[in-house]
Amino acid sequence: MKTLVLKDLHKGFGEGTVLKGVGLEVDRGEIVAILGVSGAGKSTLLRIIAGLEVPDQGQVWIGGELATSGRRLLLPPHRRGIGFIFQNLGLWEHMTVEEHLAFVLRARSKTVDQARIRSTLEFLGLSAHAKRKPFQLSGGERQRLALARALVEEPELLLLDEPFSNLDLPRKKKLHREFLRIREEKHPAILYVTHDPLDVKLMADQVVVLHEGRIIQQGPLEALLGAPSHPIVKELLEI
Ligand SMILES: Nc1ncnc2c1ncn2[C@@H]1O[C@H](COP(=O)(O)OP(=O)(O)O)[C@@H](O)[C@H]1O
Ligand SMILES: [Mg+2]
Image 1: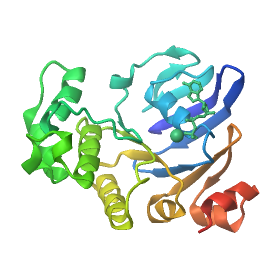
Image 2: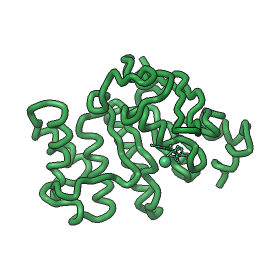
Image 3: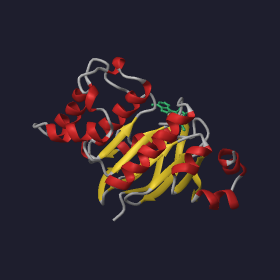
């Protein structure tokens, strides 16, 4: 069974149409990079998958379950088994590290699994910072907190909106390794948006290029570089 299936998604805002029939299938443990120029609809697509936005038409299937059908939200965001990392991280400045994780778990069930929180913080090397608030963390630690919050529910699917922008090269490479380790140990499917061919080269199994509302090409990086279907594919992927 596919972790994620998108069928014929359409979405417009007022006059403009952002998505014009997007379909995609993603397997368990698969890492997919989404590329496209600014305004191509990448964030809109992730938000529709997460249930934070509804399409005008089309379906989202998550783990074999119909989650969104047209404008009907059949599964609310917190029941989708999705971890989302927003572009600006979206940390809660008034909460400590451990409170971030407890908040997510409490939203799903009444009891908060403290052992789960401890093991997630341990996994990401944040145990010593459990009582700190975001302003007391370094940039890398803030990034790992956003990751911990997305991982604490052990999601089947991780959605990452430009997780590598504004990172220096060493931090970026470290985060690549972190995601590969998460895939190795927990096997979620990972969808991430990026503008940097290096992020694609070092992490992605599949590349999806979104252009003018459609997926114009999809496949392994080498295949796209070898036979780009459109000049923009080359433009986006060549270093
Ligand atoms: N909530 C919204 N209301 C109106 N327009 C929106 C909204 N969200 C996105 N858009 C528009 O949809 C287009 C695609 O946006 P977005 O998905 O953020 O693109 P990307 O992430 O690829 O840069 C843009 O033109 C943007 O202005
Ligand atoms: Mg965006």
